[in-house]
Image (cartoon, one colour):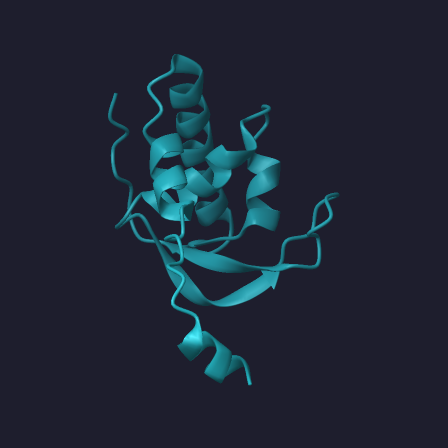
Length: 117
Protein backbone atom coordinates (compact mmCIF):
# COMPACT_ATOMS: atom_id res chain seq x y z
CA UNK A 1 0.00 0.00 0.00
CA UNK A 2 2.86 2.39 0.78
CA UNK A 3 4.31 2.05 -2.73
CA UNK A 4 0.94 2.89 -4.28
CA UNK A 5 0.54 5.88 -1.98
CA UNK A 6 4.09 7.08 -2.81
CA UNK A 7 3.31 6.81 -6.52
CA UNK A 8 0.15 8.91 -6.05
CA UNK A 9 1.85 11.49 -3.85
CA UNK A 10 3.11 14.25 -6.14
CA UNK A 11 4.18 16.56 -3.30
CA UNK A 12 7.80 17.58 -3.92
CA UNK A 13 10.14 16.51 -1.15
CA UNK A 14 12.94 18.78 0.00
CA UNK A 15 16.46 17.61 -0.66
CA UNK A 16 18.44 16.19 2.25
CA UNK A 17 20.11 19.25 3.85
CA UNK A 18 22.80 17.20 5.64
CA UNK A 19 25.56 17.59 3.00
CA UNK A 20 24.93 21.33 2.80
CA UNK A 21 25.01 21.74 6.59
CA UNK A 22 28.20 19.65 6.91
CA UNK A 23 29.91 21.65 4.17
CA UNK A 24 28.92 24.94 5.83
CA UNK A 25 30.25 23.79 9.20
CA UNK A 26 33.43 22.48 7.58
CA UNK A 27 34.00 25.84 5.89
CA UNK A 28 33.09 28.07 8.86
CA UNK A 29 35.79 30.78 8.88
CA UNK A 30 35.59 31.61 12.60
CA UNK A 31 38.99 31.08 14.24
CA UNK A 32 37.46 28.89 16.94
CA UNK A 33 35.96 26.61 14.27
CA UNK A 34 39.29 26.39 12.46
CA UNK A 35 40.93 25.41 15.75
CA UNK A 36 38.23 22.77 16.32
CA UNK A 37 38.82 21.33 12.83
CA UNK A 38 42.59 21.26 13.34
CA UNK A 39 42.19 19.55 16.70
CA UNK A 40 39.83 16.87 15.37
CA UNK A 41 42.00 16.28 12.30
CA UNK A 42 45.09 15.79 14.46
CA UNK A 43 43.09 13.42 16.67
CA UNK A 44 42.02 11.43 13.59
CA UNK A 45 45.66 10.95 12.59
CA UNK A 46 46.61 9.82 16.12
CA UNK A 47 43.59 7.51 16.33
CA UNK A 48 44.37 5.91 12.97
CA UNK A 49 47.98 5.36 14.01
CA UNK A 50 46.82 3.64 17.20
CA UNK A 51 44.15 1.47 15.52
CA UNK A 52 45.84 0.02 12.46
CA UNK A 53 44.81 2.81 10.12
CA UNK A 54 41.14 2.80 11.10
CA UNK A 55 39.04 5.43 12.87
CA UNK A 56 35.72 5.07 14.71
CA UNK A 57 33.93 7.70 16.76
CA UNK A 58 34.14 5.57 19.92
CA UNK A 59 37.94 5.43 19.55
CA UNK A 60 38.33 9.03 18.36
CA UNK A 61 36.69 10.66 21.39
CA UNK A 62 39.63 9.94 23.69
CA UNK A 63 42.02 11.75 21.32
CA UNK A 64 40.01 14.99 21.39
CA UNK A 65 40.82 16.64 24.70
CA UNK A 66 38.87 19.87 24.27
CA UNK A 67 35.22 20.78 23.90
CA UNK A 68 34.38 21.10 20.21
CA UNK A 69 31.13 22.03 18.51
CA UNK A 70 29.12 18.76 18.13
CA UNK A 71 28.46 19.32 14.42
CA UNK A 72 32.19 19.65 13.83
CA UNK A 73 32.77 15.90 14.33
CA UNK A 74 30.66 14.96 11.33
CA UNK A 75 31.87 17.90 9.29
CA UNK A 76 35.49 16.85 9.67
CA UNK A 77 34.84 13.17 9.06
CA UNK A 78 32.42 13.48 6.13
CA UNK A 79 33.36 16.68 4.33
CA UNK A 80 36.99 15.96 3.43
CA UNK A 81 37.15 13.71 0.39
CA UNK A 82 40.22 11.59 -0.13
CA UNK A 83 41.11 11.62 3.55
CA UNK A 84 38.93 8.93 5.12
CA UNK A 85 37.13 6.13 3.32
CA UNK A 86 34.53 3.70 4.65
CA UNK A 87 36.17 0.54 6.01
CA UNK A 88 33.04 -1.47 5.25
CA UNK A 89 31.77 -2.22 8.73
CA UNK A 90 30.06 -0.51 11.67
CA UNK A 91 30.45 -0.53 15.45
CA UNK A 92 28.27 0.90 18.26
CA UNK A 93 28.85 4.61 18.91
CA UNK A 94 29.30 4.02 22.66
CA UNK A 95 29.68 7.13 24.85
CA UNK A 96 27.24 8.56 27.36
CA UNK A 97 24.65 9.90 24.95
CA UNK A 98 21.31 8.49 23.82
CA UNK A 99 22.76 7.01 20.61
CA UNK A 100 25.33 4.81 22.35
CA UNK A 101 23.97 1.65 20.72
CA UNK A 102 23.55 3.21 17.30
CA UNK A 103 25.94 1.74 14.74
CA UNK A 104 28.46 4.18 13.27
CA UNK A 105 30.82 3.51 10.37
CA UNK A 106 34.46 2.67 10.79
CA UNK A 107 36.69 4.74 8.51
CA UNK A 108 40.03 3.90 6.94
CA UNK A 109 42.63 6.68 7.00
CA UNK A 110 44.05 7.12 3.48
CA UNK A 111 45.94 10.40 3.75
CA UNK A 112 45.88 13.90 5.02
CA UNK A 113 44.50 16.85 3.10
CA UNK A 114 46.10 20.07 4.39
CA UNK A 115 43.84 22.41 6.33
CA UNK A 116 43.07 25.53 4.34
CA UNK A 117 42.61 28.87 6.06
